Amino acid sequence: MATQQELCKSIAETLHDYRSGEVPQPTADHVEQWVKRFDPVERHCIITELAHILPEFYYSRSRSKEALSKLLESYLANYPDPWETLSETRFLNIQTKGRSQVDLLRLLNEILEEDFGMDLQLCGDRDSMKYVYIDDCIYTGNRFRYDLCTGDSNSPSWIPRHAPNGSELWVLTLAAHTAGVKYAERFIRREARRKDVTYHSVIADKYIENDHNKSVVSRYECLWPSERNYRDRFGHRHSAEDRESEIRQLRNGKWLRDDGVPTKETLFSSATSRDTVEGAMLEVGFDCMSTTTIGSMRPLGWQKLQSFGFGTFFCSYRNVANNLPMAIWWSGGGRTPLLKRKDS
Image (cartoon, rainbow, N blue to C red; front, side):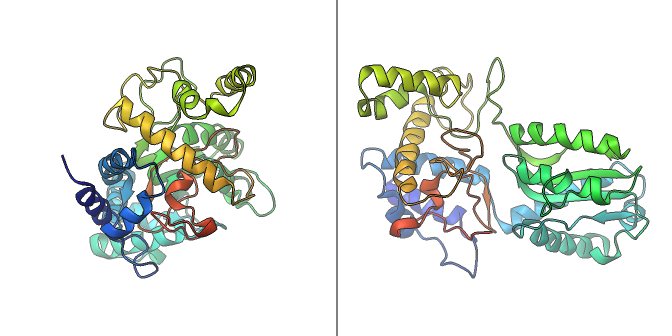
């Protein structure tokens, strides 16, 4: 069994290029300092599970570039001549919040120069009918939706405002949460039909299963505390009557999962480890919540829907999204985050 110091070193090595040049390079000591915010009895399990999970969910710069190159190949494989296709394709730069799209387009430019000997500025022209939307991750689906669909005056709303009638739209993303894609594509397909735009379903390097609105949830790759775990940890806060009333409300709102869900554990090393990490992240998340009044912020990460939070582990060398558990990135009140977030 690996020691805590060895596990902390492993996590630091996984995160080696996180915000390189902007924040100090992660070290085992930093990881060890961060994990002290959790109950001593649970620290080893938390570090063990993160050492297991983060290599799957963290996209370094080199991994992001490799994934983006494969996504580009998948797109070009739909047409006979890649060079001709690139010359006819416009890669959208439309986001008004954050820099993920801008940064990925720079990465794409490197790929185009190295693999095709052409510059991104040479791709597409005023009369192009092929368009590609690129992003690092689809989380809740809200940004994806409003970048492409009707929104407020500050939303790009590309399809209704700018898409040529009869054009094609492709979406390439490093990662995509299945519930977010399902939600956003309902609106995107409707907008596309109105302008006779051929919309092609999301192509992602990594699909993260988080759709709990199924009759059988076979996989679930985000945090979703169980009812039993919640009762054990937080049930003492209320009287028996109030506790049961709260549990009913949480259960009806799908804030809590049942025992045996998911039917196959693919995120954690075991169902028991899932319970430990979910409960610990939720408990520390509640503590973080005491220092913020940000709307829609949840203990397990930002989410507009009423819940305990989005609860993903996906992040990249660029930044950490606020959809991750607050325990990982929140620095309010002088707390030490595992990954210091750069606000968009």
